[in-house]
Length: 328
DNA sequence: CACACCAAACGCATTACCTCA
DNA sequence: TGTGAGGTAATGCGTTTGGTG
Image 1 (cartoon, rainbow, N blue to C red):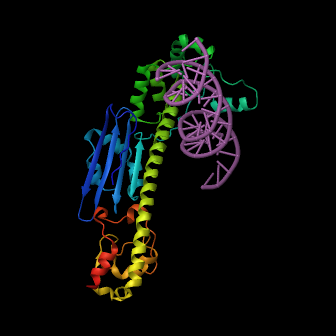
Image 2 (cartoon, chains in turn yellow, brown, purple):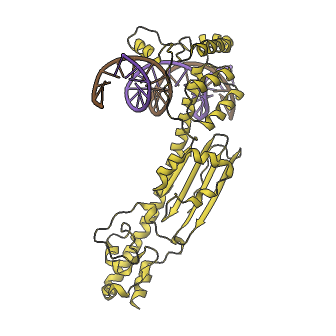
Image 3 (cartoon, rainbow, N blue to C red):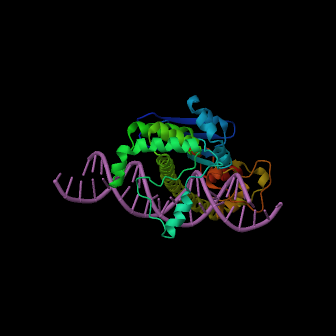
């Protein structure tokens, strides 16, 4: 199974890697894609009876992306145990930091006042810039802000919206690649200073950027789930057909279902010995694989789809083939 | 140590404006 | 030239988190 997904403009700076790894027990195919422009890493693997935690899969990433992957260690670890991983990661999140600031004017305080109707909503001029700064930073930021907004001021006052220049956006994007969250105050102030923006604008830009990332991720997830759903529907249809086959076989030749388990062979498609055929006829898709040395479990667990997905699917033969050959 | 309070930062929904087909 | 769609800066509000008394 191979999925093709695209995110953004694949013609620019984005890389797509298809990977296929094998070991003695399993085989994995998948796609890993990076988009350096967006600072996003999109990893996806569809395991055939395996998990994506497999390092081999990751090794096909370009070295350049190492940092990216390292940055998302947490996320990967979380996904290790799951058969399907679908990541769109804006690099390492910075833990929240609360400084010990000199408070200039608190946002929530103003919000409260606004709620109480004691303060007019902040106009877009940013006059009520709420930041927490060192004394020097405050002055510097204000100088910068006033400089920055000299020409913007009029447009803000007239209700016009500031459009960030390409250079400003690109620089913010660069920083977003490194950290999707602002290192409070320092980074925000530095960026604001360098870009001639108000700190609040930098903060808002990062918030909106995170929101866009999340939205894209959601879209990708939806697309992927849709495909999984289609695949499951198809699988379900196939299994129903098999079930009918087996029932027909069972009714026409009940003898073959009564053989001792020791004489039966393993069905490679579903990894159940033919002795389990009686169970198979009732719940073919939900029984867990039975190890070659284990006994048949009395209470089968339901295994999530990709874990239970039969191996060697493309070479699948009807279980009846194996069940019949077991009797010969 | 538990608790309440506060400030900062964040997420999310929404609005408002701009650009472009 | 008018218009609708899409993008995005900005706002408002609720929640979370960490510091402090």
